[in-house]
Length: 232
Image 1 (cartoon, helix red, strand yellow):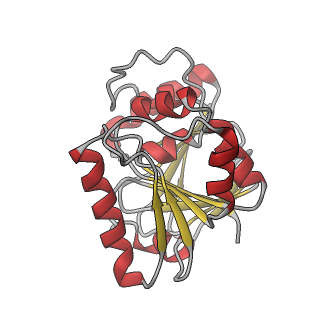
Image 2 (image 1 turned 60 degrees about the vertical axis):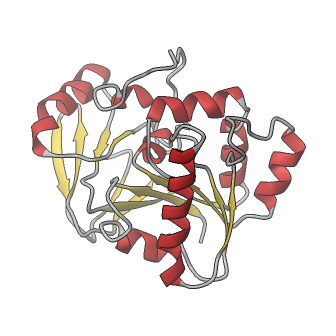
């Protein structure tokens, strides 16, 4: 089943219910670890991800950007071909603005959108989840913009909503201000949660409660809840 899978930013155990839905044995997974600097840190992310998948069965993982530099495929045709061979694109966490900057520089935002349009699945964990919303600036109080991103627009595949992972109640006033002043829905995901989105339909796979902030206030969406992203 195609769709978007948003992870709250916890471990593979915290997000186990979501991983059960997005990752099934036999898949070909393109791993985009671009939220982490190239070199040892990125290599650790790749090792963590492949190790986390191993108990789930056999997967073919194509890790991008692991040649020790910050290069990626600038050849649009080659990028498209790699994605055509993939069932899932996995975008794990790190720094949201580093991730966005890399995808902008290497023309990969459009490639990711085309992958979704063609029926592919995308898993976004933490920074990867933020990327799938309308505006990554919602992460500015959590992540430092070290690269000076000027255009903070995300992929905008959530009916105009934005995503805040790692949610805890101390952030509620900030997120309500965002929703009220910008008249924009905020999906606030705790680390032990995941949301599956198909079109404008959202479903919290749990186990934690997702809070949805809109201009008129906040609503709690417990595990198992479904709702329309246009009607928070």
